[in-house]
Length: 402
Ligand code: ADP
Ligand code: MG
Image (cartoon, rainbow, N blue to C red; front, side, top):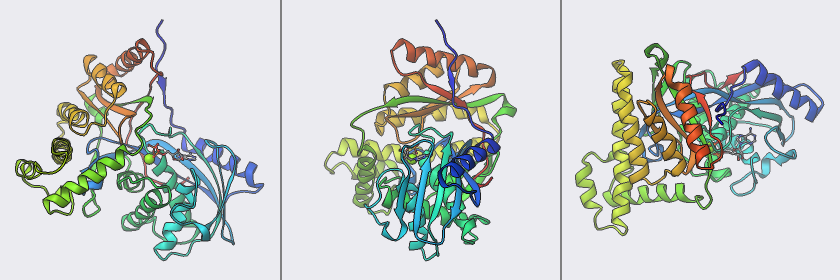
């Protein structure tokens, strides 16, 4: 029996705002000051480069997290989320690394980080609802942080959301929230994408200096689509794998006498110099991934600049091989998704996000989208795996008021 592959549906912004508003009124018995939302993202190319001073090319998705928000006069933060259980209350003055449990850390952490940067921020009530799935590699955590950031910005008159420089400041606050309060040692790609993307464009982000270029991305005019395949895979024992990769990259950079692996200009020379390190075989493969991946970002940017969109396929597939074999962050579900898509006409594809689950992307002809999704769905069913879910990525708008 064949079934229709499941879609990850993006809400209309009016629907998202209405949901968050209704949740706010139910929880707090009054109307919010407004609703702010921020998108999840998918990264076209440049994986595990952001914490190495490298480049990446994410785009905002139409899937957003909505926050109905009301500023308070005191220091209390009261939170509800349609995706979580009981309401949470946090006192802003008590927020510090290690003090906030669970999802509230992503929210309270943003207010904490803005205070740390010298801005005046008071308590607030907030109700959250979202169509960005958790842990799918689409960055629900940054979507939540960035929606809170733009809400805080406008309700406190910080005037950061109205310029790209200001948004870079908000992104830094969100990164600190995630790193220091939520305790997730991620790089800065997700928050920059959610706050600094433009509709219809991918964001070429250089994490070395924070500079950005907006690259028009209109796959549809080439009869192509970027199919996102959420494997729904959840692997145990992968906690700490991300941090371990990051730590090893930092150790390799230290050994090479550079600030970050971005500074590596001669890969062969660098690999030779790492040969004396403990675990040299692993270290050299990790470094090779990062350095070649940064080169692939440039390759894709160049292809897009000359409208050679079809030629992106092999570069995406090379990235997958590198993530699978050198960085070792893939898993059977991601490999099957990528390989099955390729076997059914995809021009190329790769896993996205941290790895060990989450999503993969495939560059497919528009006419093949349904066929490829059905084949991947079938491949998962035949292995007894959880059914995957799909969306076709459209480069959508950044965080803002609804
Ligand atoms: P992702 O790849 O989706 O960002 P993470 O593990 O980084 O996965 O972040 C997921 C976590 O972010 C959730 O477990 C939760 O703590 C928090 N989160 C994301 N979206 C929401 C939401 N709508 N409501 C409450 N918490 C959320
Ligand atoms: Mg995340």
